Length: 311
Image 1 (cartoon, rainbow, N blue to C red):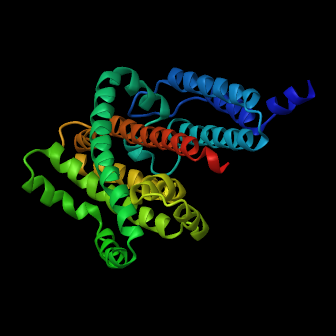
Image 2 (cartoon, rainbow, N blue to C red):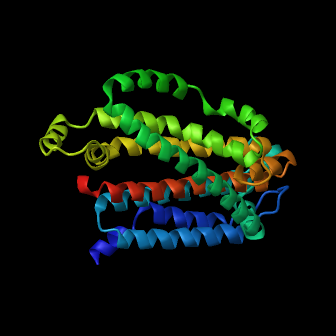
Image 3 (tube, rainbow, N blue to C red):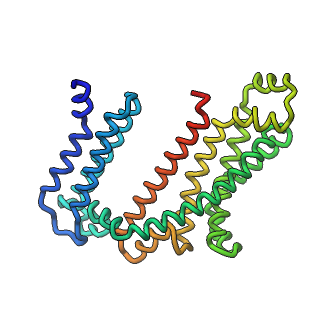
């Protein structure tokens, strides 16, 4: 009983109650219609998730991180509601640029089909380019990192080429390649390739010498050495580069979609912003953040699974 009370009487639950109570405050005159029922529905869903996580997560560290994140989300929603619909704050003349949360949430129910299509199109481009880059960079990084002389020269070349922002390739790719999709895949490949290659080479170079020496005493073949000994030992650093490449890929994809695409999350945001529909544009921005966070979360689950032997 005491343990249950300890998990219920926490700051995020208090913020949830505050979020519900401020819905009772009178609204200020507003240019965009507010839909408070959507804000309340979101608050209830988040509270249900908070309660489930508080009681299901057994480890104190994981539970504290989860509740802290939920507390930040509730605090942000409170500030968002107060700043946009409940209080007369400076800059109220530009309220249409910063719609209230209810108006943004309502757009998801209206445009859910279009939103899903844009998410699908963006993810297809991301995974095509990213998988090509990883498939090229990891074997090449293993080979270059294992050959000291070649790898030394390749290291300087990769640092030079990797220091060039991939965004500069977008106009050239759009002009030179036959379709925008091909141009987007090319830019994502470039964005993901260099950090993955650099981290793979670094991982190979940092493999403990005793591991390599032990494998040599067993007279293992070259390919076995690379893919059964060196690759597993290099995976922690390889995943660092893969994670960097994935993050950069999303940034580049959204930038490219805002320039010349006819679908995708970047196109969705840019299209509505050009027409002054900032409610839809903000809904797209939030969806980009949710999508990237979800993909990163799944990527970290995969990393933990493949590196479970290090735990």
